[in-house]
Length: 350
Image 1: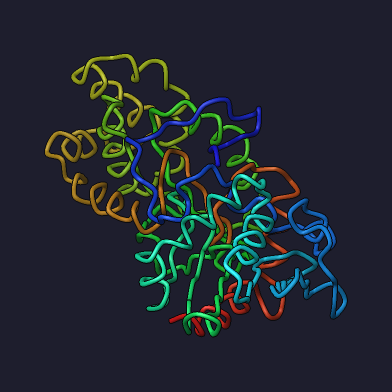
Image 2: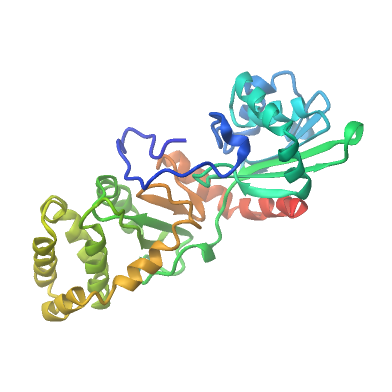
């Protein structure tokens, strides 16, 4: 699934690509395609046509295969698939993902491999692909005519404990919605996010509590130094104003050599009224290098595949549309919440 598919975000800054974590996604299957939809929309997927709806549409029966939809705030946040027939189970999973008959055949081939089935017999809960937007749980029991698959595809909701600590936080402590932004000061897409969506979030401190985390990409020559400079400003309590100034001067320091960039960072501190001598001492002696490195170590746990990466209430944003924000806010604040419903399902796979 591409990052920032919206036309408003025409590019994204990415680190080097890594292999998919799960064998089953060897084919081009659009994970999360039908999660977040209404039960009625899910039931209308081409591969699920002919399924018999039960329990108000929350259970679909496709031959001997049963699909149980976990619905929170009117949206499907997880689908439990149970059945003995590998072809039926993989067809249902491909249908949930909005895939094609070719995708279902690819899944069936993967599920039929002895090595894959051996792992499934041990039980598995992993992210469905490297973006970390979805979870996929598997368990296979019995053999021959007694074989039974249990497969669960669900939205991945990360707990707060996963995100690296940062002192760069704005918004009221009691704000109902929490945003985590992993960003790079030399990334064009990050600058656009900062000027548009992030500015709107900052303007609503009673609604959003915003955490900023550093992830300067190594091919952006001055990005790490800019992150260090922002942390030097943070030591004087002015991270957000200084970050505003960094993005404003993006074209200036971004194209400069390292010595000139450092001078510019110092001049920004001076214009903002910081103790410039203390700032430049902090920057030249690299007093904040370790802090930037520490925050970067959280990238793997947050499935960072490019910058900016943003989570709302533990759910990774993919489009930044108003509809996406509303759906996430609804399912994460429902009672029970999406995280609670999904966790109860996952307990049976661990």
